[in-house]
Amino acid sequence: MKAFYLVASISVLALGVSACGGSGPDCGSYCKDVAAACNLSSLEQLCVGNCNTDNNAANAAGCSSKMSDVLSCGDSHKSDMCVGTSNVCSAESTALSTCITTYCSANPSNSACTAYGSARQQQ
Picture (cartoon, rainbow, N blue to C red):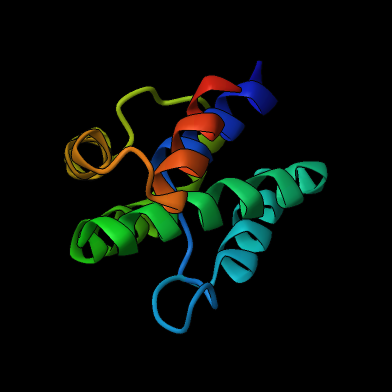
């Protein structure tokens, strides 16, 4: 259950700070740090994929500041994610999700939105 919650948290928090498309989170570094903090290194690649997908959608939707809010919060609460605290960064995550979903509802053919929607269906 710990592993599942961590994956869900990482995905919901969309976390990182990336080399995806120039600016934004470095998902690789963030996910490595979170996986190490939770002693679950096997989840690092899944985290990176989810983080990059979420970051690309946030950039397309103009939600970069909300992504930054989520990442800052997630970075400050890594240990909470490890123990399955359900409300970790929920306000920031909800704001990001709402921002992306609003944009993607109006732009469903955007490739970042398509990838974001597919990733959500797989969780």
